Length: 314
Image 1 (tube, one colour):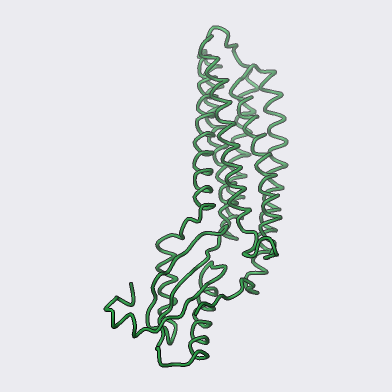
Image 2: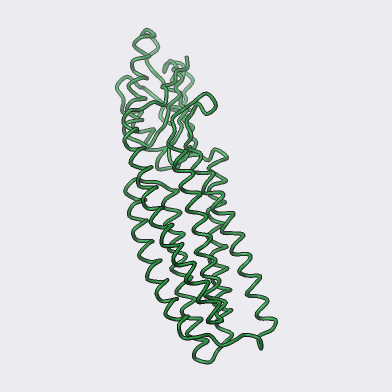
């Protein structure tokens, strides 16, 4: 006998609204910072002959695009279930993280290509203007502050997509630090350090993109929840009065939430109404205590599994 509780959980409604609001506000702050920074970095970089500063400006521009991806996903992932998406729209978050990762990968590749060209003709590297160093330092402070602000917002509403976007800002802070070092090296008479800095920025961006894309791809392919989450869900089910055993517990990720399929063992001598009440209670407990979107249960008589000497708590 299978039974599913519909994924309409009033407890999650205000949380979903709060998540959307946090995503929108922190992302809009990021948009403003990135528009100002990328404009200043690219203009000053071109004027001061710093390829590293221009690379950092392009990096900030890529953030701008990723911010729009996050805004788009935040708007759509909060929608409830409909005829086409009967489990809701949480996977918009995973898809957004995948797009974000691929974008960063492409931007990183472009930076590596452009920096590599400079190494082929090192004699053509111009010396940079001191203003480039001030702008690099300003970008570093702005990006690090943005990271701390965004991470705090992401952790408050527990959104992996917002955490990814925050760490994206931290990767920018790291790249701005490298750029500042490269520009300083160029000013001290080592012009090769400017494209070296651009190269490091490219590697940082590419690596970040790869890890986001790979992670999101696994989630889109129904990756299971973490072992800790599964163990906690199993414990909650076994703690429910009337549940004698649990087997075939399977999970898959849906955005930041989890879908659960499980076989629950109950006393075979009770009637259907009693068995239904027990499993209903088990579902409610799991959805109340864990980030679970829905629980699909199948009721089994415990005696059958005991007589076959299968461990009921496996």
